[in-house]
Image (cartoon, rainbow, N blue to C red):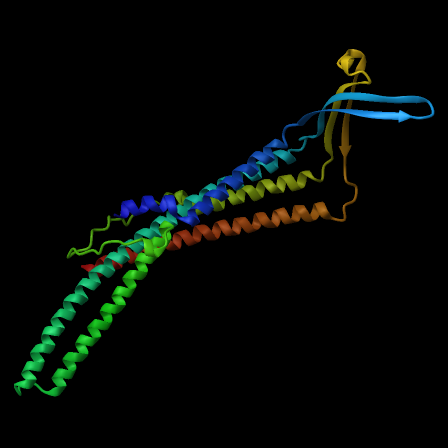
Amino acid sequence: MLNDLQDRLLKGNQTLASSAAAVGVAQAAVTSSRASLFPAIGVSGGASRTANVATSPKGTSYSVQGTLSSWEIDLWGRVAATVDAADARYQASRHTFAATRLSLQATLAQTYFSMLAADALINVIEQTVTAYKSSLNLTQNRYQGGVASAADVAQAQTQLKSAQAQLVEARLQRAQLEHAIASLLGQAPATLTLSHWSAEHLPQVPQIPLQLPSILLARRPDIAAAAAQVAAANAQIGAADAAFLPALTLSVNGGFRNNDLGSLIQAANKFWSLGPTVAYALFDGGARRAASDSARASYDQTVASYRQTVLTALQEVEDNLVAASLLQEEMG
């Protein structure tokens, strides 16, 4: 049943669907940034009618032209750095998706086993209620026979009522756990009904080795996502610093223009223009310096976040290893 629930989680969980959409957004951003490495080429055609009343009659001019508009030559690697940053953010989004998926799968497994534990508890309490009912009947019979006191009957009634109250709480907890599973599957709680576990013993949980190589931490997707964010912030520094250097752009325009549409495409009607442009900002009020400082501060922030993510991962591993050891000792 748990394997089936895990499959349904991957298909229906809305948090996971949102994370997958974020990956798509990041991937599209990479494609968009890479487009800046190539020139934008277009073609256009038109006709215009002009007239000068004093000198000539009306006339029509036809044209067809191709353009290469403002292509920035990436001399200093600014565009390449922007692409690298976008690609690193895309990798981070992929790792974040994997971390989200793993977290949801773990939550589902924990909730499922908690539900089985609730079923086992319900079975125990139901047996206890049955035993207390028999005990109350016996005590009442003894009281009527003059063997037991009224206090004995009251005590037996209190035990029964207490067990019945515990049974209600256990059933409520079980229902809430089932509702939590439905939410993880992307379903309305009313549409999911899971059978009660009626076996005497709970299923065995796979044994986890207590000695695990620390290199396994590098496989955690949350750590990989944090590392990719560091790479993105580092690439953004290069893009910000490149703004201090002059930008070289190239524009090309060419085509045919004539008043006669039938003879438009002829060598005599050809025109073209080629224009490189070098631009350098002499004064910007400190905008470029602020952008560079911001990129470096963002990098420092991602580095600190990465380190904290690693420390949190180490804490979680140690906490759970200790818990596994002590709980095993408690079971023994």
